[in-house]
Length: 101
Length: 193
Image (cartoon, rainbow over all chains, first blue to last red):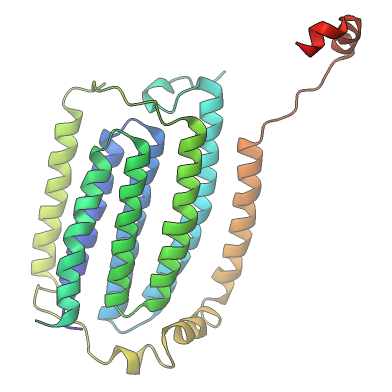
């Protein structure tokens, strides 16, 4: 493999920044959640790149755990969004301003 | 030009472009489909980085399971609801974009000062780390050094499944005795209509 490792890390950083911008600018709860997924993937990419750089499989193991945690997180997060939609009939986060019913 | 370099320069722009397209789509279904494209390009990056097991897991778990769940929820909640164009905070989008660009710039200089843009990975990855193939070598590490975290992950998945049922499950409302009596008194046609 001849591609410099820094290219992968820079790609991972660009994707992470785009995910952060997505969380900041989108108002739809589902799209905010997708941006968080993008950030998780970017960090996974950097973990695998570090694993390749140091010739050590621990980075890949942590990326694997991160995927398992992401799967659990998506299930709970989408359940929260569905519950929110049942309460206020919208997924726009600007409308979810009430702390207690 | 080495082959992995070609693959990187083909898929990295697709990855960034699909991420930008995901952020700018109004329609949630289109955004989800662009996110699938992005997940596939990241899977290809794993392949270049000699991690074929994670390549398969990425496609099965992310592009398969997670995106199907996302599309399912989008369909459930209705796709026709578009976002309002206005900003609640003044200049929020501009400031977010500037901060994101600043983050990338900072990372660029940190990488140049740190490992540098010429450093390549050691060549003999298959001989040092991927002994006996990547899945076998990964399994050896996972089931020896990281066995306890692996088992804890199974507990986490069970807790997440129960949490989803508790949060999203529609609770059946208890029917009171008075309602049963009024329902019995109503004529048959009213119930049928």
